[in-house]
Image (cartoon, rainbow, N blue to C red; front, top):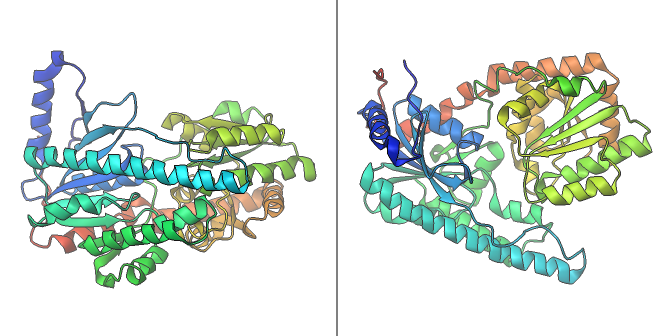
Length: 451
């Protein structure tokens, strides 16, 4: 089977050629396959889970369109591996990390501006999604709206289309009430109740829901009152590319130190500040300077973490890369001796499954992590678990792995074996196809060769 072409609309000069390519892709979609519109408030194809789902559905005979945010360098419309990608410019109305100190008024101001910022941004994205959904509906049509959260407002787009018999899938990446409680270390109150209400509306509107693990499924059954048969667990798992480790970055190898790696978001709830304080203990409390930590990713806390690293005098021991190309990220990960997961215990983190854990395991890397329920289920023997939120214990765990090569090798092999046999995307993704066959029993796709 040939690969579908990737088309980017760039200039009027190539319009005829591009239109021919678009027609080729459109005609290659399998006649018996349903049409799906995915909504995701992140960038595509950088959002790995959404990309995995979309490309799997296309390869199985469905036509998939995605509405997502746009990076500055990306086109407004593009065809990537057979997926029709429509993009929306991104705006940030307020900075959503602390700049008013830990005093009462500073905390109140942070919550207020964050609430207003998210309300404006989510309302903007939802409105723009609805407008673009009309374009997709009129241009190529769709049978299913597949919304990836957050936000939990996207059910509003599905409501009018359900009057025309369209199906709605709620794919829950995060528990938004717990995300709010964890990010702002807040107590349950008015904001949390509002988020639970939106979550309930999303679940009740959905014909089926998708959960990333058993904990999320339990939430959907209890808070959303969903029938278990209408819930499908589709775990995060590394795709084929991530299952083939890259060559190590030689510059990191030349440091002649233990290389620690973190990949992922840099937001308040992600615990990278815990990691930096643990590294401070590692260097200054426990007297080890034979390590270098590469922190790869970006997010709302990036500048705050840069400042914290300077305050802790870790500049020589830590590199915060920001966003880097995938090839560079993979080379750095391949060079790692130990991978770190500093997600602290919180209402969200205790029950969430992280893509980075499976990626670490796919690369055969030992992991140091706080002892959290779903992380422990995913990593099992591939990780050394320490008491939640104990930064000194985290530092001591790093030393234990640094000084025990055979233990690192054993853990890395266990992780790679678990991913190969149970957690890679080619395995866990089958549940996504089961969900669609259940939702559309009379419209199952049939594979057809593309000529």
